[in-house]
Length: 436
Image 1 (cartoon, one colour):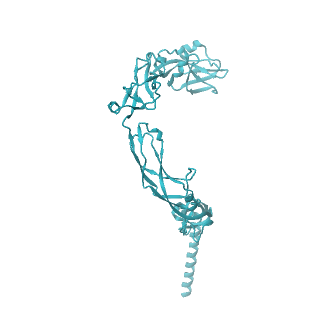
Image 2 (cartoon, one colour; image 1 turned 30 degrees about the vertical axis):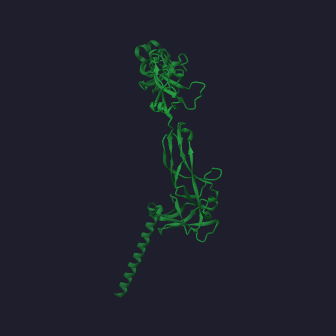
Image 3 (cartoon, rainbow, N blue to C red; image 1 turned 120 degrees about the horizontal axis):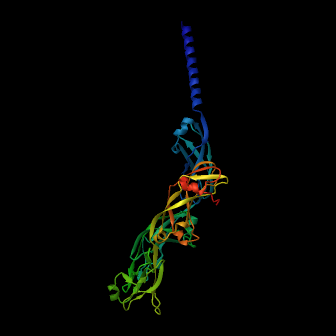
């Protein structure tokens, strides 16, 4: 009895082992491991960075890795499953080659290779220094002459520089660049600092504390100066079909100088001495005119021996409109020995452009056609086209084809000569190919 029981237990154990082997083999076949590059770069962490030293080059920041893992594992992996490190322990000043080590939090994943395998790092002593901040006023000339610019105020007036010894020694100035473009009142602004060497070039591998400073540049208008806008007006009407599209004055503002009582009484706008006549104009009108200034007032910087003038340009544009014209259709580039029959004899063309050109348009200067090049026997949908004979009338260049109706024409091409014009007149809409 006991022998039979032992035999049964042995058989059961063997069956269990075999079933496990079969299951493992089946699972392995369905989830085979394979090797490939992992898609995302892995950031490199620096360990044990030595105190008092700083890298002056750009050590490797990320690596690519080739791994081997089961198919089911690949889909679940993320960059958080990997850690790449470069150990800087015991490194001294100078150039070093540091191996990059990558590990995986998933024990079923094998790291096959790391690219690159090494990180190159150059270490220099860390240096600190203090530098005063200077303000560089840019576009200073954009502030009108009637305004006074006072010395800039900076807070704080000095900053701490930290970085590699060689970089800190190159620092010649710390600058707060401030643009005065369009400025008429006191400027107050937080400004990002720039570190420059003796040649005015930026210095890398240094850090500032603080990185920004508060800059205040007082700007005031002088009592007997004032900036005013210049206004010009027109008189008359342009030619029929045209309109005044704009008036431009150069310079558009001027700074005037004179007795404070007169300057204070003036408004912020000054006119030219005469209106610009645009009667019958069909294109831009440009004239130089003087300013209407009160007694004792002049333009700052103007030549005292001749009157100050401004250039006034008046834009003249054509009134635009639209029109629809009906054009007969020609055929072009029809192969020899073939005839073409069109589904419609004429098309509607919607044009836009100057009204004066549309009003006097001669339809004979427009051609509508269908290009049949490369088309053989059969029925085709062809897009009609329109051309302007602008060599005969240059004003046609101002017109634009807005739309063509219908957008496509059915063309039936068959063997034999093109039907006679009489057949076309009966509604067959047939056109002889002109070969162009």
